[in-house]
Image (cartoon, rainbow, N blue to C red; front, side, top):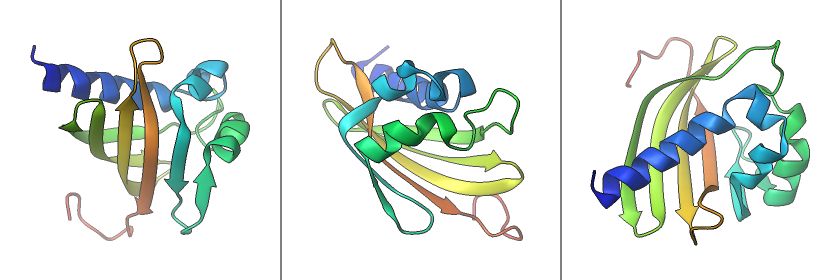
Length: 130
């Protein structure tokens, strides 16, 4: 396996772990978020690392008995050493969203962490892939 494939696979694994309710509601979820993290929500609101980590256990998808994120078509590309861009779609509680994440690896000890995330709702009548 080459370095690019390995980096992309590790970023995808981190993304999937963050969709797991057991991880979202635990300290592991916070460890997967970069201290310089920023998210732009569907509302256009900007979320910081502190806001995200503090709210992670209560965010949608964090309950073992609630709806779960169903990801599809995850693709990734190594933009530079230590920086992977992922794009994918999710369905959550019947709602689709297109998502984009940047994953950054600064050192071996901390590993890959989500540096940036944005989700955009997809209209209900929009065909997949459009």
